[in-house]
Length: 229
Image (cartoon, rainbow, N blue to C red; front, side):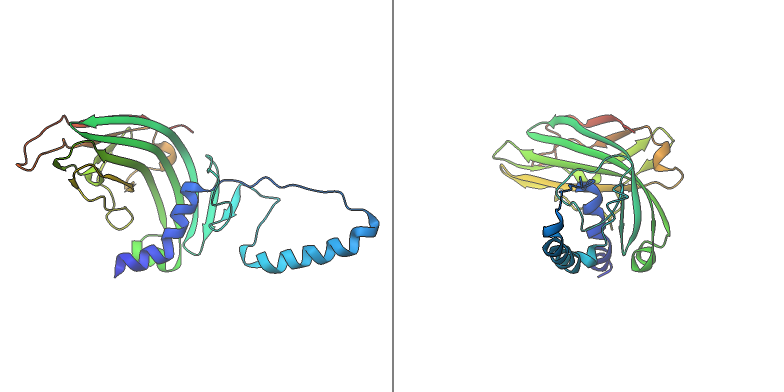
């Protein structure tokens, strides 16, 4: 129940920061004879989008509903009823790594700094949050039943922290692969003693893939990531 409430109040915000970016505004010339019709169109547009509260003069700050199909950039800030969050670092296309028949692709790593309010703050029991976000995909190339627990990877940071994914925020990627299946999800690592902006690099440690007899059939995966700011 607690996780369901958290997703309701905070999930939209997290997805927005992962996917959104600033919107480019466009303008047009209006002649005097078209002024009346243009004003009516603008009023209709404002009425239909009033709830979004767009601020074209400050494109670096956006609501969670805005620009959901564009990529966020370092420095972008998203606001929602859950609070305000700013992306402070981002590294794309980290790479693809293998453990036996399992292929792990780390698509993106973000560093995020922000504040929480309302129900999100109450559920997380904090008003300020610093975290590293890891987006990944996995696949099994074998017809065999394989176990690989991508969502249990341990992270270390250059600031001296060793962390496991936060179970409330993170996706649960089922570790059982029944043949040639694909999975994807996101893990969130909440920083305890560091600011996201101070994290310059991380290392992710994934356990080796195993067969039905719980025997390792691949190597452990260790991934070093430099965070771009």
